[in-house]
Length: 79
Image (cartoon, rainbow, N blue to C red):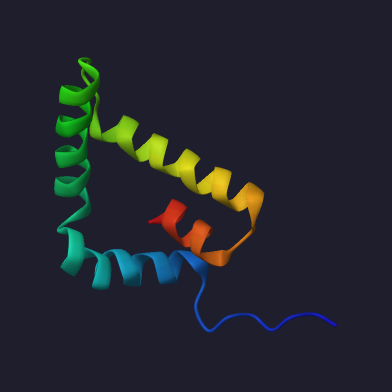
């Protein structure tokens, strides 16, 4: 039996969440990624960029999804 399609796509959900509840909690995505990059740079003693933070966070979600596949992992990767 085929499962029903969700009311919104993963990409639509990611856009809604990133520019809604998560932005309210964490601030604009670019500002948050730059803040994390600055902290990681200080912690590791090497320059870390916001793009590298983003790629590392994607790998966290991929690892979680390999353990237990979940829609939220895809939403977070897209976000």
